[in-house]
Image (cartoon, rainbow, N blue to C red):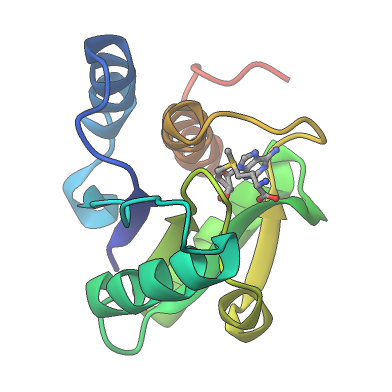
Length: 156
Ligand SMILES: C[S@@+](CC[C@H](N)C(=O)[O-])C[C@H]1O[C@@H](n2cnc3c(N)ncnc32)[C@H](O)[C@@H]1O
């Protein structure tokens, strides 16, 4: 199983890249986190946010491995504790399908795409900048994995 993070947004500041890499590199080979950055669609006065999100959706879908489970990151999504996330991670490892976490761009994710996702996941009730979401998600995936291994990174 591979964990993919498909994130709208590229050319992130160094502190975002360093933060993401810090956690991604800690993941073991059997549970790698692969980042796929998606170039945002250019915003212009004549394009509505819905049009932009629909165009970004096409790019997002092209980046998702075939057969992958899709988890859309959204502030209106489901709250999971880290222990619950670790239980999901264990189930995902058992069923072997890839899991793709999708982070939207400045306008968010296309509504139809969110309906089609296997889960909408909230990291916080606050609206977070998309770059920060990938760092927090990578840390939480590492923490969830460390729980499955009884690794001392996570203290209860
Ligand atoms: C700047 S936010 C977009 C905000 C947009 N107004 C919306 O309603 O989704 C960019 C992306 O970051 C992710 N995101 C932001 N805050 C989040 C949160 N609290 N939980 C989960 N994902 C979040 C989502 O994937 C979102 O599409």
